[in-house]
Length: 250
Ligand code: ADP
Ligand code: MG
Image (cartoon, rainbow, N blue to C red; front, side, top):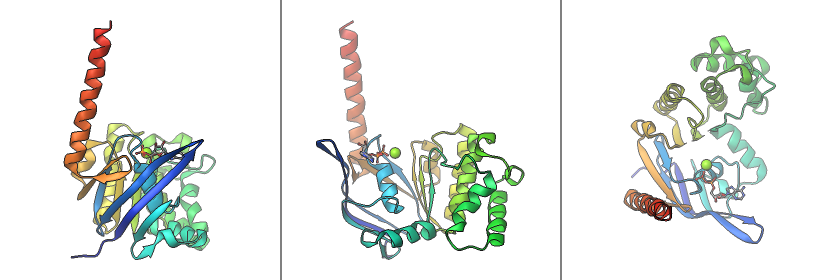
């Protein structure tokens, strides 16, 4: 049996909202092998983004263990976590999260400043990556001069600058038209082929064609596909019943 690349045990993330506790993750267990392409599914509010944030070291758990490539994220101090984020993780967001005042090249160069890469090397690496995502002729454009698909490709190039072992993408095609979405998916698939471990949160059924693994979240826990389907069906029935009730009252 191959050792897990990601191993999560009893993971909890609770938020205090006024007097109530929101249990975003509520005792989640998960193992993921290296060089897999995992699609994470779950209804809104099931904890998908929270899971990705914790895996990427962008936030800390309330309880539980997170082991990525032999490193215990839950035991790291802020400094160690910052190094982990910079060196090991490429994060891709639904809303691109580019810096609006910087052009594409500057956006991609930016994270290398903090990784101790020499200025000349920064530029050549960023240029190479932007070429690879098909933006050779858009390097000096600012985000507001680029389409959504182009902005997401800049974000992918940025995610790759420090050559991360793991790519985390939170609904990366959620704000894109169908064609741009496909090209972003193909790029993620390419990164997987090149040996990276990829986790993608998505509602896009086309992403399943690229996936080697699927996980299903409900109420902050991983559930089986059967359990997930059953819950989806129940939710659908409930919606239908509510609609029928509405009609009966008209
Ligand atoms: P998903 O990405 O699956 O839609 P999230 O991980 O964003 O779900 O959120 C899971 C639950 O945790 C939701 O109920 C959400 O409102 C809550 N939550 C997430 N982040 C915070 C936060 N920073 N403060 C308070 N509640 C939060
Ligand atoms: Mg989310």
